[in-house]
Length: 235
Image (cartoon, rainbow, N blue to C red; front, side):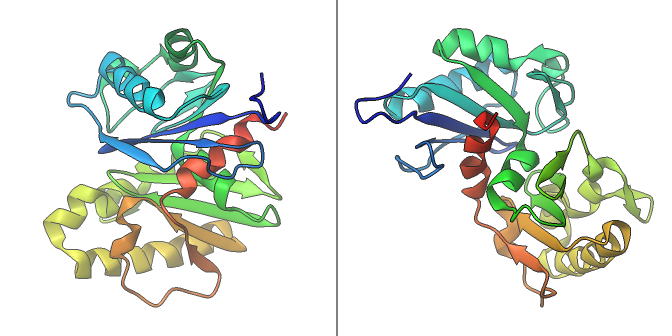
C-alpha cells in the first residue's frame, strides 16, 4: 500500500454544509496536491455527496486510503446526525459505502474533530470550534479526543443554541458586527465552562472575525480540516 517512493498517500475529505473539499497528504500529513472544492449538492443526500467525493478523488491522483470529516456525530464509520445535510444520513454507514465506491479503506470522524487533530498542540485542555454553515466543536485533553461532543446544539443564550446564534444563517441575518459581539460572549462563556488552555477557531466563516482575541485563542486555516485527516490512521 505504498507508491513508488515508498510513501502512503491519504485522500483527506471534508464534507461541509456548503462545500466538499479534498486533498492528498503524505505520510507526515504534508499536502501533496492542491485543495479542491465542489459545492455541496442540494438536497445533500448520501448518494449525491458520495458522487461529489468520487469526482474530487478522481482529480487528486493516486491514493491508498481515505479520511473523511463529516458534520455530525460519527460512530464506527456510521453517521448518526446530520443537521445541516439531509435526514437520510442518520444511520448511514459512510465508511463502508465510500470504501466500496473508491475501493480503498475509509475512516470517518466528525469534521470539527478532524480539524482539531490538525490544529492542536497535544498538551493540556484544548477546545476547537468551527464557524461555518453550523457550529462545530471538539475537545482534547493532552491530545486525546473527547468523542461525540455536539456542543453547537446546546443552549447558549436567549434560549438559542450556539449554532442558532453563530451559524451562517445568523451571520447573514444579523450582520458581522452583531455576530462578532455574540462570538466574543461565546468565547468568554466557553473559557468559564471548559477552562481550556487554548481555543482554536476555524471554519469558512472564521475570516469574518473582527475582534480582539484573548492570547490563548488562535485562528486556524480552513485547510486544517483536511490536514487533520492523517491522524485518523495513527494507530
